Image (tube, rainbow, N blue to C red; front, side, top):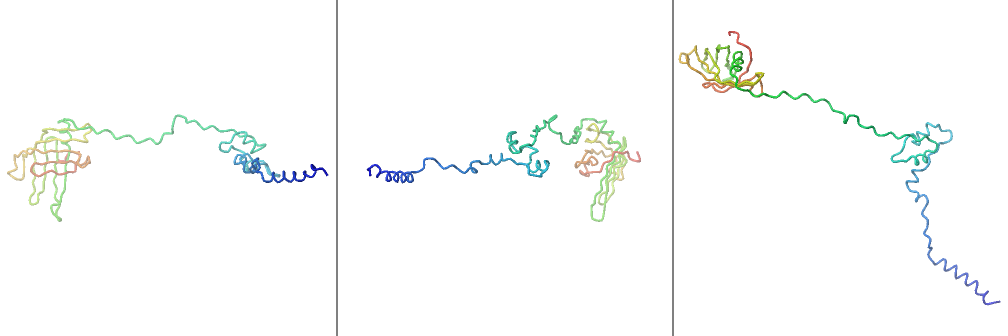
Length: 242
């Protein structure tokens, strides 16, 4: 036997052992399913089952519309044989945003009173002023002014222990009123031509009037030099005895 032939089995065994010990140079291929990822899942065809109606198939596979960010090519792969739907463009706004409900009109501007003695006299000449008050729990008293065009008929005041009443001419010293008469103020001169107390006859009273009061046009504030400042109910109607 030749020495070369005797070595051959040993060489073959050595090569096999060497191949087992050396690390493999080629990396292991990842799993095909894992490498496919979500893209392969999204592109998986949803085929029509045997005996299934076309309508049911389209509805089951949602083949009547595109999925989010799906291309036409991806749609054909997902729904083979289905008609590619048309994309609906977003409607363009017509005439801008839809207007909301119409807001109510703003209130008319408040016109401040201006000097107008004649206008103030006209309003005062057909106005009545009344207030009631309780000096005690069991009594109710009142004070009122009945204006006529040139006279007060009368100015009536119930005190705690007396009743005061006076009549006589009046005139405007200074008057301010706005355009519609809803706001005004001024001062009048009242000559007590008649009174139920002798010492009151002939006395001249300077009385101030202003409306509205307390935010209400039917109220007025009257300042009498001897009685004080009080709020009265106001009505623009001539007194019955004028």
